[in-house]
Amino acid sequence: MQPMIDQIGGEPKLQELVNHFYDLIETVPQGRAIMDMHLKGHGLNHVRPAQFAFLCGFLGGRRYYHEQHGHMNLREIHAHVDIRREDAEDWLAVMETAMTETGIPPAQRQTIMAAFTRAAVSLVNVQT
Image 1 (cartoon, helix red, strand yellow):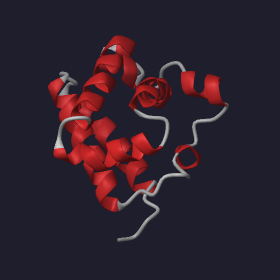
Image 2 (cartoon, helix red, strand yellow; image 1 turned 180 degrees about the vertical axis):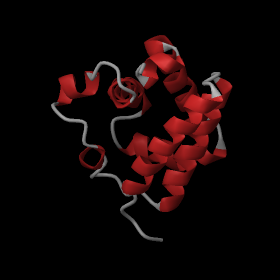
Image 3 (tube, helix red, strand yellow; image 1 turned 90 degrees about the horizontal axis):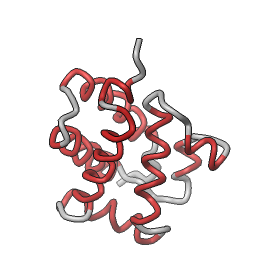
């Protein structure tokens, strides 16, 4: 079976997806809280390449993030950030829009969103 990254069009398609996702984060209302989180940290210029590196490995490609940081533990990566359920839901909604608008096929989109949903819910660390 082909890795998911290859099923969606490889690294070029993933780069397009990550860039479009963060373009949306910067412009749509659902992205505001996520953007604010990043602005408190390293900023959006840092997060685009970091997310690309992470998602390559997450989707079965080269594990750039692991090569750079020695792990791919999402909870450790986000431990310094307060994440509410609404933040996770907003992230997922914006990512689904980005996947649709960049032409990720429906079957792959459904599989990826299921994995992203499990990951996003696991990061919630603040109850509102």
